[in-house]
Image (cartoon, one colour):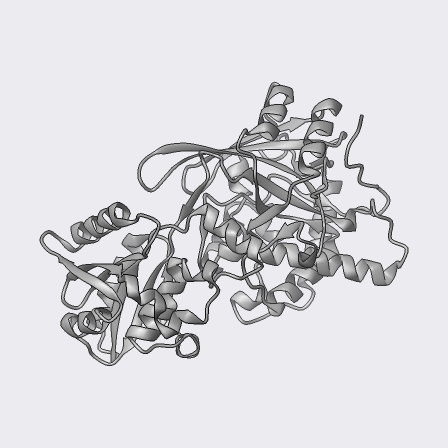
Length: 458
């Protein structure tokens, strides 16, 4: 199914950039305006200068920004700030990190080119909706610079860890780079150029699909860029670089693969005490209060209880009423699965906690339908429960005519993500948070029309 190929990656020249930490960045879509400025202050060769923040993030646009990025990209190559590997390679990319639970883990992945396929072909499978405004911005940047600055994070089935094992045995003795991110996670990259290993990996993926975990907009942008290239050249050959996209691929069974939950802070219009909220929630949930300790202790206890009660059958949530400093464990009632708010959903979606929260809890119990939440911006999203708690407490003090309700979630299991993608359905917004994020700037893929992509070399 998937066509996987080596490529000549562009990367920072260690003779020119001594501290790689100063120039690599998180993905563009998680960088706010203040952070973007701080990256630029650290080093003028920061990737924020090439992989520009999306104009939709700050509501404005800068005329000529794409041309400026291309000029910088070309200049940095001429100055040898950016260098290109002479030989095509597949790159092993490992991240050593600390999970929020305190466990030290290593996520093992590989970076390669993957042949583009429309979603209807069932080769590359999405699970999120994309937005035209984001794609339009990314398309102009990709087409103008003729480069893919960041990778799409995808998953593939490999319970035996065959692909990684093959590449580990043939990787270069020394990594091409080692660096840390803002969370002190260690990112390490090795080259693999051995023809036999590359051929084995190519053949391995030939009968497997890949699943987009993070980077749906990057992928759909590449599809749009290919369509634009086809308009310019209807005879675009299959081995054109416009028919490929740079991906970070991780086995769905990898022991270091982590999905964090995204918690919801809901600003329910009107003033409501905890007992009033609980009375409404009891229509769909068994509600049990947790008492004692500070607010941080309560939230920590809630998260522990949620994990213990999560048996994979009925959804479990935590609820914290910041105004009264009260915490509750919520477990979905068995007969609530037949609630009309859930009945219209496909079975594969009805099992998702995020769907139960939006359809049964918010819409069914609290009367907050999805469109109202969007229109009035009633829901905020947090991957860090401590940050969510802090914002909830501050919001409870502000008398703005709304009651902040913090709902804590368990992580979405990876297998549920794959099941939704296999079914052709789309998960709600902020259903998954794959951690840690891939760094932008470790590798760049140049779309050079004069260089054909050769999937396997024997």
